[in-house]
Length: 221
Ligand code: SAH
Ligand code: DHB
Ligand code: MG
Image 1 (cartoon, protein in one colour):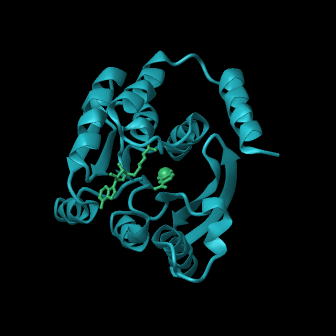
Image 2 (cartoon, protein in one colour):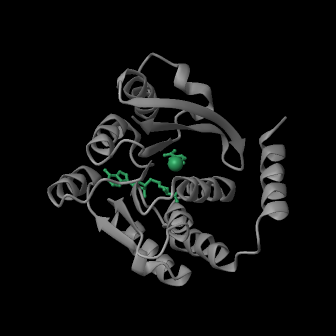
């Protein structure tokens, strides 16, 4: 079984289950054209985030790591009237591309994009009493995973769902040598979720268009 098969099966999932979506196709095309790296969630993962938001009845969502806003748009579309997604991005160019994508997808009114280091934006959100969020998606610089999880807890309520992307990394999550900061970040997410008594979590390994990776998902008790 190869990455080619995984990608073809991802196409099959989309073709079989998703309505045609020119708006989201245009978002990915704009990202490719304007430069952010193609590390957005896959369409199947984006739809999973949107379904999770609906299952959760999320009205307030926090995303850490916007890139071109592809995952943001999936979650924004799942919000009820009056719902909001706050999304945090460090890179001004990514933020600019994302803002134009939010316009293109018609979700700008529901999205609060905050430019700057996420840890600074999180301090501000705490000071504003912006929480509690119903769903938190962590998908930024992996070494900060424990800091982001810690903030997610501070901005949560019992029942908040936290999803953390890229925690398997081709199975490199098993490597204990500390040579790769991203792998260390993945391992730090496992140790955080495993040791915080308020969190009940699991992780799901995934294959698909983005290769072999996975996400952790946890609920706050
Ligand atoms: N969630 C996006 C992908 C995010 S990629 C999607 O699926 O469509 C990770 C993003 O995190 C990049 O845009 C990167 O610029 C941003 N990032 C990296 N370090 C950050 C930091 N310290 N604060 C905020 N964003 C950061
Ligand atoms: C990388 C980051 C991501 O958020 C992702 O989904 C895939 C890869 C990376 O930095 O390599
Ligand atoms: Mg990711």
